[in-house]
Image (cartoon, rainbow, N blue to C red):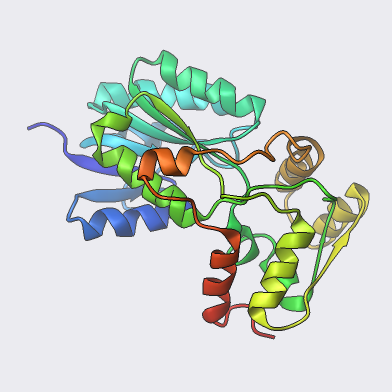
Length: 274
């Protein structure tokens, strides 16, 4: 029997969970592949890959920890090879904007000969509500080594919608979409919009990279994550990704979600209440 399942590699993350709900709502057969799933998947244990991919026709792949790490491209290429052997014929890859390592991973995926859809994204709106910044937002002051460089923050729900479209509509195969929000904001401007939506004071303070990484180390974050954040703030956040792109409109036929809408909807949940 021809494979019919969709597998989400990284199905428990910010995007994977959203994609799962959308596909299930459509009545499609979908399963997550992660360290905690029934069919365990571990990027650092290749013996788990085949069992996690068998029976699937297509996959959404969100690499951990980040496509910028040195071994990512080799892992992506190897995963595609295992996938093809299991009957997989299409991979949707969540890639990075402006990251050289991400381009190497995209090339490795395409070289496998499998059909691909590349979704490039950078900073998520949800970093302020589900990720690394939420505790500082709740405390009333976000301290980051980011100045006046602007970023068109992308809503994770837009990424999920784009991934669902790519997984269910063959017309998106072998295409690349640059996903951004409709306008670029500095981190200071983003925090100001969150404060307005939440109805309480929340400040932004630019700090040095040494202060930032020192604080992360003092908080007990693993060195690998600290190094990754240092690269994102010190190299990728240099203006290369400030331009807005049409990827969301191209794949979904609608405008991307504005940061102000994200801030209003999140504030309405009470998450940012003092």
